[in-house]
Length: 231
Length: 242
Image 1: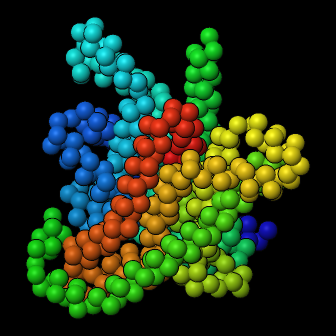
Image 2: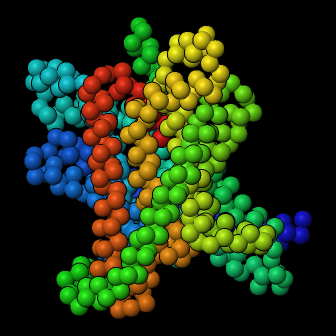
């Protein structure tokens, strides 16, 4: 109980929650931009002209095959953004947009060729075929896969602890170092375990909620497909 | 943009070349962590994958807890917990061991989902046929079901392998003497040559991951072209583990 009281003072909880809020902000901004850029890249990779296709392919392969942590370091030093927040988001957008592009490409590939032929026979241009016919179907299919990538982004924001951005993991670690100063006593395993356990619980609650949403969409999609094929 | 500028300064590369043994050791450490973690994760993946498809409820609950916990909390915080918190309980491990254990157990959760989905893709009739011939559960799995799933789960397994290799870089966060750590530390302690050292680091990771992910995609597309049934199963597996 002493350990509990020492760790969970209002100030400490407030500090951890500020970190959690930072985690959510970085993840949210990164995901929005990644999905937008990734969708464009995925479409270009599949339907662009030769040069654009190769360029998009190069970008996707480059970021898919190198660690995200490397890009956090690189962006933190060199990205042309004035704030640490901007540089952090830049790292995740670079990396995740490549992953999203690959997911979108997979979704586009799964659309039967007949759809394009049918659209062409009705006088649709490629752009309007994509916009009105292919992309809506593609997104419905790939949303569960995208959601699990979203969870990955939330988890990967913990890399920012390494570049001293006050997100959840950094604040937790920081608090661990400061706790003996606050309480005036040496800390032991119970305090540290409570501290890390609390941070893990926060990450878990956020990600588990996301994965429950993902499964719900998956079940609804499957039900819709089954109904379609049976009926 | 000064990183790019540094890449074109010859003396920085000469400096880097002079300390190549340290990079070589770091690269070997990364490989060591990756190979041992991969072994551990495959073992855990098959074990928990089998447990999750068994008819024993407690076993299924255990696998669910394992998978949900490790898929929904960051690897970095697990590593930090082992590195910072366990010493208070008297458990002190060296950084590379921590890397192998944490990365292995973390990826094991993903591998087990792949194995579970693979087993789920085998028609029920096979299990019934095996049971009618007097095969036990373990025999059915090892002799009949798993060999058939290998073909279909290979691409997602290799994709997880690529993720595992990229995730070994997290060991750098606890000064684990791996490639990422060395690239960072070498530049910080020397002439701030971040450009060349990050480039080398990226190229080395790329050199291991690119062949693997390219092979996985090629093989997957070949499988999908061959029959539409496999294609559907693969899509299902991909939804479980992106």
